Amino acid sequence: MTRYEVPVLIVGGGGAGLTASMLLSDLGIDSLLINARPSTSDLPKAHLLNQRTMEILGDTGVAETIYACGTPPENMRATAWYAGFAGTADAGRKLGQMEIWGAGYTDTDWMVASGCPSTNLPQIRLEPILREQAEELAPGRVRFHHELVEMREEGEGVTATVRDLDAGRDYTVRAQYVLGCDGGRTVGQALGVEMEGPRNIAQEISIHMTADLSAWARDPEVLIRWIWLPESGVLSVLVPMGPERWGPDSEEWVFHLNYPSDDPRALDDAAIEADMRRALGIGDHPVDVHRITRWSLEGVVASRFQVGRVFLLGDAAHRHPPTGGLGLNSAIQDAHNLCWKVAAVLDGRASEELLSTYEAERKPVVARNVECSLSNGANQFQIGRDLGLVPEGDPEENWASLRRLWSGRAEDEACRRAASRAIATQSQEFRQHNVEYGYTYTKPKAAIVPDGSPEPELVDPIRTYVPSTRPGHPLPHAWLDADDGRRLSTLDLVRPGRFLLIAGEDGLPWCEAARSVANRMAVPVDVVRIGHVRGDYLDPRCQWLQRREIGPEGAMLIRPDRFAAWRSQGASVTAEDDLERAFGAIHMCPTAGGAS
Image (cartoon, rainbow, N blue to C red; front, side):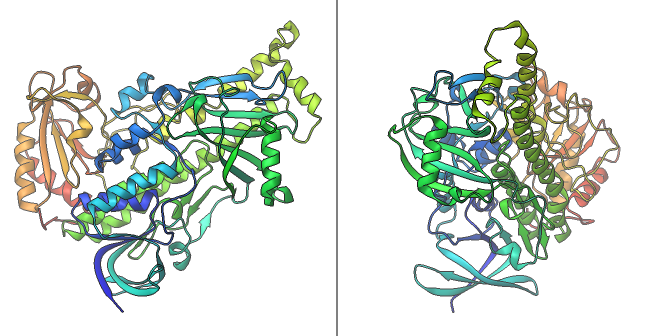
């Protein structure tokens, strides 16, 4: 049997696995990715890519391609709720509308947070972009239609048997670490890891189709249409999928329907298409159904994210309801957290204990994401109840409840006001900026050095992100000017696999100390001073000055994944010792020798 030796084996070629492959390649770490399916996803699946994710994908070199293929900003500024879609005089009436995820990068909070806007691209078109880049970075190391047969940890590594399903032969892979990115199909089960949380909340049906719906899908700024169906009293969802045109002129769509878990119609494709046509009210309008997918709504988190030398990422570690679009984003962010740590250990700069911080840091974040996704979904159904809709109730009574919202009658004013307030609560899903961008790594056993400072006070822990350089917080974005005339973000200063020391304009002693410690401990560190009128980079708008939370003589260390790891408000007479202790604590070892 042919035998391969590789530092990292990646099992699964979805968002988490392909991102991990690209990140490891950028870090100079050899990896082998295997995926049991012959190709990337043939389902649209997840589609929202938030700001943090686009920063990560920018590191891998695919962000510009994704922006070019994704939904134009003007077509993803809002979401809206409707009474039906077509087929009757009142169908398609708008019940309410709300800005979403930065309103096409016009919301100043999103512009302040990052130079990368959110975008929207269904997984069916995202994954081929990621795969092409992964294959270019690691030729011959991305293998689809190769299936994990078994694996076992032996000594200082993991031995896996892999089957080439095209050639019909098995081969052996010996790796120091395995990343399980297979959606929980193989790796987690083989390790005995349990998924904890509610399952089978609802039976969902997704219909991917080509259809011209422009006659009814008005409102070009609306990305997601939440359609209440008075005939049944239930909620359905309609989302454009491009690929060449978006908004009302989108060529493809996905329509989501809910069925009771014991409804036999959910098993019959013809019945589902008939239900779709009836729900949308489009009769025999031409529709080409590509795929009908059945899936169960659940919100679960793995009991463990690490078992020995094996790590679980993405859907193998957590599965979310789609409300809020946190699943795929969490998967990509898992890879970002883990890969620099694996590289540091493989390069001999860090103790293996650093790898235990992956679960310590990511599990609380994704558990919160799952909780928020569940809450988002529950609140959508609460809106229906607040609108007076009764599932399986009398259609005329449901229509009568909704007609009060546009009747214009004085006696219906309280009803209209209540409906408006009910819909407004869904900002918990569409303005969850602190959940999707402001998440922190401040729990015990994180790879940071706490400085004893209090958490920033938040007006709303879900909806408002407050930039901070407190250890464990993401590096704040600020626009800087370089001497050569370039304008760049503070985030652009962090390079793959390298720490960044940012000092104030008078923090030259910290810079000198960092260079000395980096040489002695063989830690890759870049060093910059930032000030409004003095420094290696200038802060023309005083954005950094407002967010740095250190004095002119202070400094901070930023991890390779752009999270603050340590800071000093001012100068120190023991700067070298302070930094040496900080690097030792971050790397989970007293010293951090190894390759530079």
